[in-house]
Picture (tube, rainbow, N blue to C red):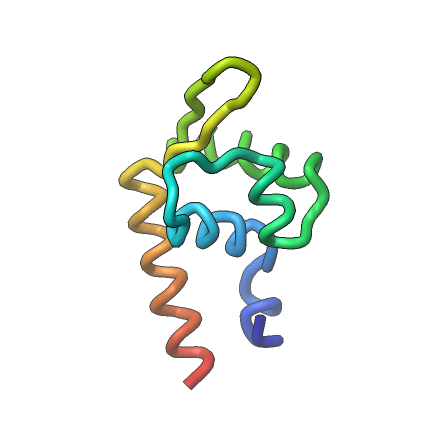
Length: 90
């Protein structure tokens, strides 16, 4: 990402949120996200817990996997981040 974005925001949480928003499947889980955004699994889980506390995401268990659902508030914030990134990169 652009250096200016790094100045204003922490890169990995934004990338995690955008990964959830841009996912082609609704079967996202922490280890998949950690691979997509090149981040440790433990850091992704920590960020996701913060997202959950702030009602950006919710978890749904299916056997051993915990799928992540991006809630409306999370979608709105992700959309706004995409707009900001577009402005900064132009």
